[in-house]
Image (cartoon, rainbow, N blue to C red; front, side, top):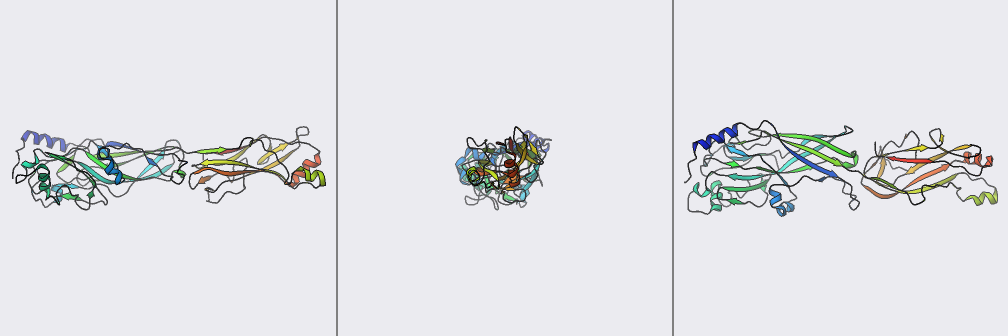
Length: 417
């Protein structure tokens, strides 16, 4: 067995660094965006916009195959004592345990104070282990560098190249004379460990790469704007991120700062000329003129197209008021009659109770139309506004001898719910 002696001064330095972890947590932003895509209306999920770094930035094709990405952090681990050959206690060697179970973080809307929940778990871990000497000086025999790395932890079939169960191999593993890279998937929250076959005077992990998975809220039920929140993991022996009793970190905590941006769409398109609504009888005015039979109602159904990914409410504003609705009047006499306004929304949009919206009355106070919400992104679907003057009011209009009634009615779609 061969190894180079370690200078005592450098060992003391390593002890001082490892035993005085940074007081402040290392911070890492995790960002995601929801912006509806008309070409993919069924995909109502957040897009993770966090820049990829570390392993998956170096080997993007391997991570793409596994639908995995990583973040590299400047968290290092240094040994505080040698690793003994054939050690029985897994905590006295190379061991790894990360928070692979789901953890919960609350996120809060910056303006409204609304809260939602984000869940996160670590699905992979990686680094480079570094030795104080050329690896061939630590093992027996005349071997190549790669074979020496494998012998240090077992044999070619079960050396460092093979992830310790229950961890799983994550991809390519680069190496050099005194270092070996790894990235292992962590499907369950459990200890993964390697037992050294030879004495290792000291060892370090040069950084921390981790992969993670997010569960985000349903953006269709969220308000436009930014939601923020954080989740802190402790680092060290017996903590959330645990590398055993020998390998101590330079940071004692990792805080993930979540930033979820919601950019909703609420767009209503009325055909050209659709803002001028003419109320007429069912069969036109000619029937009344020819037969003298008074029409039972005056009405007009006005089409519109709506695109919506957010909650919204509807209400009326009136130039002329009749109770809780709008009115139209005859200019000369001032005689006025109420106009009933209602709305039919396309499939995919429901009220607060999840019921379809068919000829729902629109009122000045907004009652009954306080909340409509999409079950999916509705992209330019057909809806209808219904305008009607009832029979008794029509009779008054005809009996008055007036020729024309008019008034402005404003229909409001409001995403500020």
